[in-house]
Length: 317
Image (cartoon, rainbow, N blue to C red; front, top):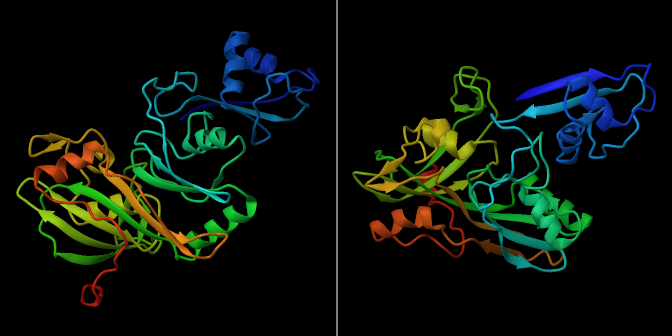
């Protein structure tokens, strides 16, 4: 992440943001205003997208100039897939997030994320209550009213939302089903990664799993996270010696059995929770995407669907 920060000089009262940014960063006026328009500029700690906004002496202005090795002004991929609506009613919209799309705006850019696009679909802000990693595909639910958003958020916060993920990992010997109970903490030696270990003072994280296929080339697993931590499934599987295929950050292989893994092959296949209006349990399911489905098809395994089944009591110890 590359940023530039400056404090507004008292000798330039009521200076427009775009003009001040161009002068301080030695940028063409048009480029400075584009940085503002895409959401890469913050005034007094808050994102500001009005290049004509008047600045006050002493205010601190921060501009994000590079994020993930790329300028915020870089065009969004023209081929980025659109999300699919799985369910929509007066209170809730559930969508299938495509891989490669961020769940929410990044620090340096707004407009391209899932919450932005769902908001555009609704013609009003979408209530974000949970997030998937950029490369993870699958079910994401949003509230359409403040009341619905609050109720949905409580389902996740209180651990009542039930989730089923599917993943493909390298060949590894695992019990047919089991529980991964390992705290998570940031990996100080590898920025951007989390580690699953009891050796550090981490936050509790619990994942149940079933092995759907165990072969010489790869394994297919069903994952039932009981907590919702950042990178939980990716870090937990890595701790078992089975990083998800295509997960470059955690050392996942780029292919297995001659089948490519073009991204981290993790898919949020199903979500069950209480409807915010009726209180009745509802289930949303997202079809298995083609890049992951190839692995299921190659070994003749049918991906799970329907009710999310908990593990047998014996597997939980």
